[in-house]
Amino acid sequence: MYIIAELTGVVTEMLLAHIYFNGFFTKRSRPWWAMGSAYIVSGIILALLSFVPNASFLRLAFYAIALLLIAYSFFSASIIQAIYASISYCCLYVLNEMLIFGLFSLFHIDAQTIISYGQTRAICIIISHMLLWLCVLIVLAITKRKRTAITLPFLLTLTPGYIAGIILGLSFCQQVLSGDERMSVPVLVSAIGLLYLNIVIILYAERAKSASDQKLQAELAEHHYAMQEQYYTQLRSEQEETRAMFHDINKYMQAMRTLAAEGNAVDVNQMMAETQELFDSLTTVVDVGNSVVSVILNEYREITEDADIPFNFDVSVPPNLGISAVDLYVLLGNTLDNAIEACQSLPIEERYIRIQMRIYHNILFYQIENPYAEGYLQCSRGKNHGYGLQNVRKCVEKHDGHMSVSQNDNKFILSMRLNGCVPIDCQLLENTHLSV
Image (cartoon, rainbow, N blue to C red; front, side, top):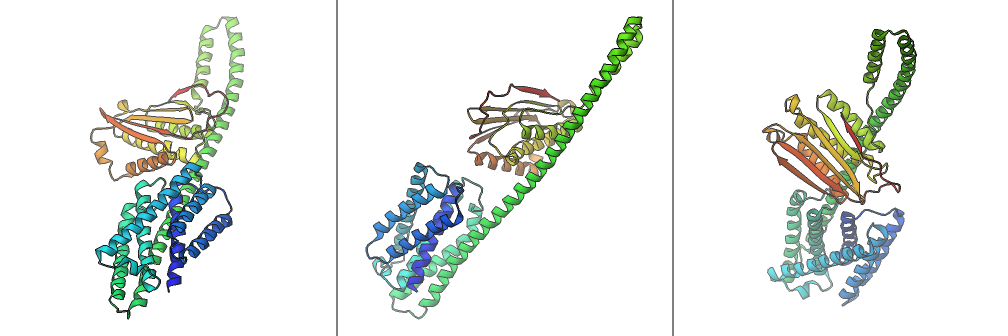
């Protein structure tokens, strides 16, 4: 049983390290078997060191070096970030051991007797790793550098199980020290079962969250594809109308020359009016240089036009922003949906939406402004308005950006910046000022 507990502890440590790194960094494009082999080799050496007497510091040093190499080789971490992640995790590991000894003192348990080889050391390992799970998950829930299922409310539902497992383990230690070992094996199995159950719950929640995010990404990508197809269809239609218009204008010009030569001013003015109607009948297709942004703005130009909302945008962006089409749709789509909803609560003459988008030194700056009716923000709580801003905030955090909201004089201004954008090498496009 002791050997099983030691091996279970090593496997738990490697799983926790993986979850810890995965919470801070994205994975590099490495073969899965390479990462798996690194974890297995590290785990085997850790397991061997666990059976060596008085090798705690040697084991901790190897653990830190192994985690550093794994973080640097298989996650998108620089050498400095890998060192920091490895040291921070090992500090958490040491802090956890100190908490265990503190619990032993609180329950009046002799720590030296407990950590000696035998069933008591096995239950000590189980208690230690249950507490380590809780510590790591709390750190991830607080920092939350990426979207994750591990949140503080979620951990609150698991905390009773952790507390029960720890108390069960401490009670087992007290029972063994008192000389009563009748229930030692069942209690030990129950403690291992609680640890396993919590591991399964966490991994299942992460898998469910990942599947949900992938489904959302697929839906947004499909919607963007449909918008793009509509955009290019409209663009082709606009080009055909333009060619037909110039063909008709050519005819009108020839007719006007003839009428002007005859001195027929009335017919010339009538033909000029018909020519002007041809220009006015053409629809406007938005083109700001970036195909994705153009597609999104083109769709919302039509929506705002149907809703009688003046839509002004000042956009200067390169063809390549370094941001996925789905993320751009989350940012622009959600903020424009909220702005349209807010404007619809106002009279037509008070409505407007203004957006600005710039890229400067690999940073994308975006701002949207719109008015809202008195009391609108209170009435909008509980609708999709709040969820839209939550999705925008998560997307901004994903790109290590910042978002701020200003609400003054019934005017809503949302500003954000996104880091890591990649402009094209050539000179940025000239500012495109379009107003619909």
